[in-house]
Structure formats: structure tokens, C-alpha cells
Amino acid sequence: MSPLNKKTGFIGAGNMGEAFVGAIIKSNLLSPSMIYVSDINEERLAVFRSNYGISAANDNVKLFSKCDIVILAVKPQHIYKVLIEITNQKDYMIPAKKLIISIAAGIPLQKIEDLLYTPLDEKSRTKLPIIRVMPNTPALVLSGISGMSANKYASVEDVNIVKTLLEAMGKVLEFNENDLDAVTALSGSGPAYVFYFIESMIEGGINAGLDPNDAYTLTIATLKGSLALMEKLNESPETLRKKVTSPGGTTEAAFEILENNGVKQNIIDAIAAAALRSKKLSA
Image (cartoon, rainbow, N blue to C red; front, side, top):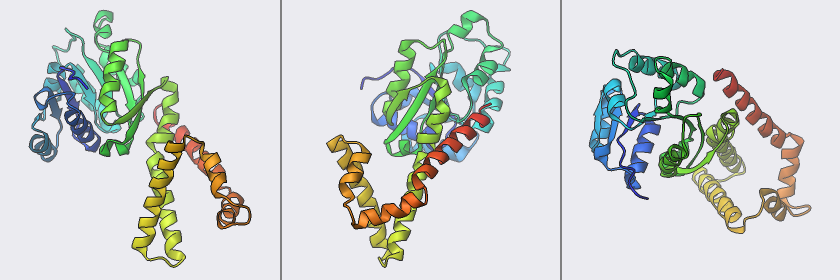
């Protein structure tokens, strides 16, 4: 990957912000001298200075002013305070193009636009494109997948810049914003579903008489191997499941319990409930 050569600032020094910073430095997209972080937590700022050699300070306004790309990496409940602090400055203006990326879960583009665009004229708004991103926690180990949606002022170049940044942490797909609630429910919350399944498999192994460490090792290796097999063979999970399920065998006995208890439908319903909650939270 080639360097972006754009001053990039992170408002928020949490785990996802750190994953982002680490990934773009490791991928040589940006040198540490081009990255800035702002947060109210001095301990977290010290971590960023020590581990990544970047500029870190408690000054959202200065960071917003100096950076070409600003990534809003604060918790959703804090984003309004942060943006109001920026736009309430007497000299708030957009003299040159500035790309805004929000990874604040559940905060729609419209609400960010209402805060950032209200003091600006139309010409200034065109210089302030906003792209909303829904990452997931495997991004912390560079194995994430993100969904992204751009507002009307974002150009193809802007979208490609964000894709390049996100690909440093894993994969990325572009969506209409209306689909981001479903993305949140499937991939955003999805790691928790997987961990829940892992918990259940391990507990099942222990109940069947296995040592807890052995049950853990068998479960993790089985999951990793199953995913690798599916990717290698490029076959559907349904096809692969049927290949493992012999008539009258052990797997069939297990699936009788799963089907009788509606496990598949429960998972489908759970994702629907998560999507609905996401929609309500973003309203």
C-alpha cells in the first residue's frame, strides 16, 4: 500500500481507535508523524505516544483544524459534545477539504450533518464529506470487517481513501446507510454470537467428560479448521454440514436436538432483534 500523505486525526483513544492507528502504521499507509490523537484520558494518550510515537493531546478543536482526515472514534453518547465543542468555535470554518469518518455506532449521518453543517454554507459543506463506518472487534487483530456508507458530498476518491484505511484492519463493504442496522446486527454484534457458541461447545465438551483445557483446544481448533475448509473448498455451509451429517450417526443425533429446539430460527430472530434495536437507537 502507498502512503496517503494526509494528516489524520483520531478523536477518541479507545480500543478501536488504537486498532486503527496500529493497523495504518503497520501497513505503512501513514508515518507516525502524520497521525494525531485527542482524548480526555491522559493515560490513554500516554499509551499512544509510547507505543506508536504519534502526537497525542487533549485538544479536539486543534486536531480538527490541522487534520485532512478526522476519525470520530468516541463512544456514541459523547459524539454530540465533541462536535458541538468544535462547531461552537468562533472561527469554525472549512477553508480546505476535510474528510470526516465516524465509527460511532448507531449515530446516523443526518445527526452528524446537523451538527457539522448547520453553521456552514453550501460551498463549505461540499468540502466536508462524511462517511459512516461500522467496524467489528476482530479489527483489533487485523481480522475485522467493516460496513461503510457515504453522504452525498463524498467523492469516489473519498470512498476509496476510507476503504484503503479500513482494509488495513481487515475487509470492508460499501452499503446504503439504511442497511447499516443489519450490518450492525450481523457483523457488529456477530463476534458475540460466535463467542456464545464457543462457550456452549466448551461447556458441552466438559459435560461429556473432557478436561476443560482439552475442551477449549478442541473447540477452537474445530472452528478454525471448519472456516479454513469452507474457504478452501468454496462450498456453502449447508453443503459442508450435510457432508458431515451421516444418516443415523452422531452428528444427526446432535442436529435432532438443535432442530427440535429451533436453534437456527432463534439465531435468525436474534439478528432481527439486534437490527431492530440498532434502528431504534439511531432514530
